[in-house]
Length: 127
Image (spheres, rainbow, N blue to C red):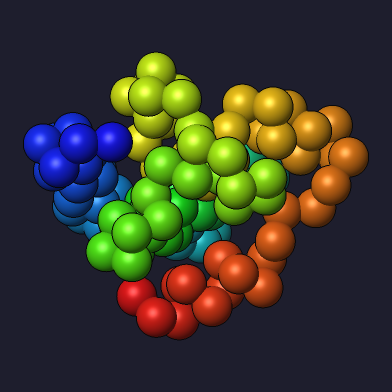
């Protein structure tokens, strides 16, 4: 990957990080509200559960973005964390925060291997 392409990916990742960090500050949807009507409480609980899932998904995505930025800094960006082969430029353009090549991501999705959480945790601690 050329320096220019790397800088472009870094800019995309930094913009995504800023977008996600701003969205995670909005936690109004998870406030517990009490109403006199039991049906309203059930509906509010469902909306709260959806808001919690969205926050969790965005927090995980933010973590992946931060890890990708860390990999740019340490020179391992674009290399699959599982097989250590290069990740295709098309995949990186589509999902800049990806840590795995398409083949390894498909295997992880099928649970044929567990993503290396210890490495992710170590990188997250460094960030």
